[in-house]
Amino acid sequence: MPLPKLCILYTTVISIFSLSSTAQAQVILPKPGDYYGRGSMLSRSTRTVQQKGDRICLSTVNGPATPYEGFLEINVSSLFTRGNQIHRDGDGQVISVATDGKSIGSGLMRFQLNSDLPNRKLSTREAFLMNACMKSTSPYSQEIKGTFIKGLKFPSGS
Image (cartoon, rainbow, N blue to C red; front, side, top):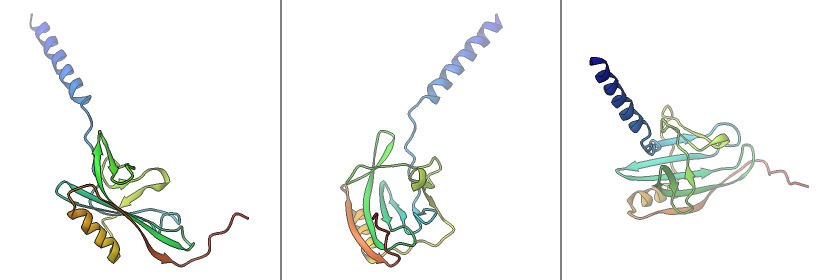
């Protein structure tokens, strides 16, 4: 008779394991800090994440590809979760985060957290927007044109 009791115990353990492994995955948040892209396409683009309590703000700076000229485009937004995804307030864009929280974006547009470098100095306007985002208690999204980066004129399609 001891054998059936072991079989029942074994079946119970398997059932509990199955339930816990199918539980909904938790949302993985990006770690605070500066994220950098690789290659000439992303060398002038960065992502900065700041967090205080439950409030998370993301500064997205998109610059022209090296060696071309153009303006920096800066978007500062609070983030929110819906289901198991993170979204940017304002446009609802999904922010992909790696399982370790140290990489955001996807494909060629992936940015890595680099804790080896000192914190990136935000421009005065970007710092003002990040401060306003962190202090706000409602959804926040602001987009501005940043400084002009000198370089080569982008080739025309003619």
